[in-house]
Length: 253
Image (cartoon, rainbow, N blue to C red; front, side, top):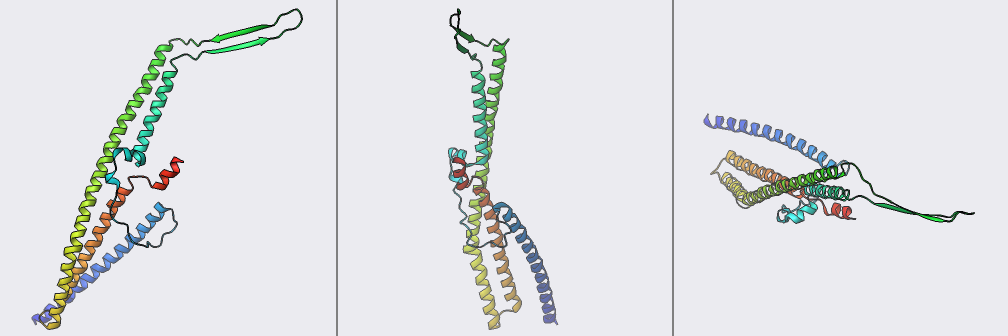
């Protein structure tokens, strides 16, 4: 009687697990479709149906780049640095306007008859009213814009460096966890399956124990896959901190 109840309980657990596995499969298939749609958008490659090839190594050179290097390839820093250049150029123009632009002209008139030829020379000096105060105010305003641009650059640099440092820490931690799962947890789960199967074949174990060991092995493999996905997203976040080399080459030409 107890054996029958145990079998029925085992079958119920098996059905629940199959239902859960089916639900997880449907959810994973939906995630795959959504991811492929997003990939089509980022790669501009049309309708991406599948992803082939080996995944890249989860190692990014971005954390090792200096602030000077990032200034050339990090989009936010490039834009902030360009704003400083624009503000400085506007300030230089405002300073140059403080000096009046003198103009001069020379005209030669040739007249006939009893009239002699003559030369006319003229100099024009602009004398706007209240020029000094207006131009000083303009220079001051442009200079303030330059100061604000520099402060914005410093703040952007701090944010970028902190973001890269945070992602690098997550990447290192994720890679360490992956190594532990692959080198320790997965082999232990596989060994447990082998022992449970051997015990069942020898009559010392039950089929339920063998199924349970196999289930735990699959759960561990899913943990590894999920962690690989998380670490890959962190790696991608680091790689997207800088412009691709082909974009940089095209911009410099």
